[in-house]
Every structure is written in C-alpha cells, then in structure tokens.
Amino acid sequence: MRVVLAEDLFLLRDGLVRLLEAHGFEIAAAVESGPELTRALAELEPDVAVVDVRLPPTHTDEGLQCALNARRDRPGLPVLVLSQHVEQLYARELLADGSGGVGYLLKDRVFDAEQFVDAVRRVAAGGTAMDPQVIQQLLARRAADDQPLARITPREREVLELMAQGRSNAAIAGKLVVTERAIAKHTANIFAKLGLEVSDDDNRRVLAVLAFLDRGR
Image (cartoon, helix red, strand yellow):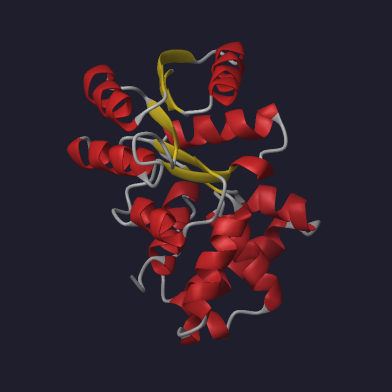
C-alpha cells in the first residue's frame, strides 16, 4: 500500500515514515510543504494520503486544501488528516462528497501504533476513521438546531458516536459491554429517528450518519 505523507516537523515525519514502513506500507513520498504535497499527490497517485493540516508556506490550512483539491481531481482519494485541534470546517469539507475514504485524527489522542495503523488501513480501504472528539463536536453543532437528535437517548448517542467512528455492531457491543442484539436494536432506533435508511454494511451506515451530521452546512 503506497502512502504520501505530509508533515512539516522533521522528527514527527521521520517517526511516521518508520512506523508505517515497519507495518508494511510503502512510503511513496514524505514531504514538508503544500507545493510538494500537491506534486506528490498528482504524480504518484498513492493509495492513501496522510496529511497534516498546517504546512508551509502559509502554515494555516495548506495541507488540507492540497488534499481536498487532489480529492476533487481524483474522486475518492483516501485522505487521513492529522491535526492538533478539532476544526469543524475541515472535518465537514472532508465529509461533503459522501464517498468515504476519509479520516480525521488528533495527534495528541493517538495512543498507540496499532490504533494509527488501523486508521490508515481503514481509510485506504474506503472507510472512515474519525476521532471521537470530532464526532462529538459535529453532533453538538447539529443538536443545537435539530429535533431528530433531540429525540436520541443518551445510550443511543453513545452508539451513534461509536458508529460514526467506523465501528461495527460487534465492536460497539464489546466497547459498551452489551449484546450485539442490543446494539442492533439501538442502531435501528437511531436510523429511524434520523430518517435514514437502515444498512447492515458498516461503511454505508457510517457514511449515512456522517451525511446527516454534514446536512447543516
């Protein structure tokens, strides 16, 4: 699996390269600026891009804008964003086309190598890998002016947050220490309250939830 990595801090970039290579990834390019990222994504056509939001020369949203532009030129290009903060606008831009292959992780909340590697693989396969804090903030924004979310119970909200992270019913059941049958019931109730089509396909149901969260753009 070929990766283009964009990170301006040398030690972090080098560490990510070594980590990914140790887990069988091929680093097609490891760059430190927006222009380099744009060229790498256009010329190398990687399986997934792992991108810091803030890159030279602007140190604002250079990295993400380069990735989003590349995703418009190549629809469905898997992009995993690494950031120091939850920036809802960026998260919503990633979700806007509803095609999957997106992730948004907070650097200081990646606690082990397996967690990060799993997120890269999931995004590369067309799935999602959203940090819980990103999901919580999107939910909070929607809840402020959305009646369907107001009808969701606290337990259903927990299930919804875990679902939006890309977890299966079995994984959610294990996390909440309940039966998979109970989670299936909760997810059915959530989809009914949100007016969404029920789906047993993990990625489709995640995309449905994320599309709902993005509806208030």
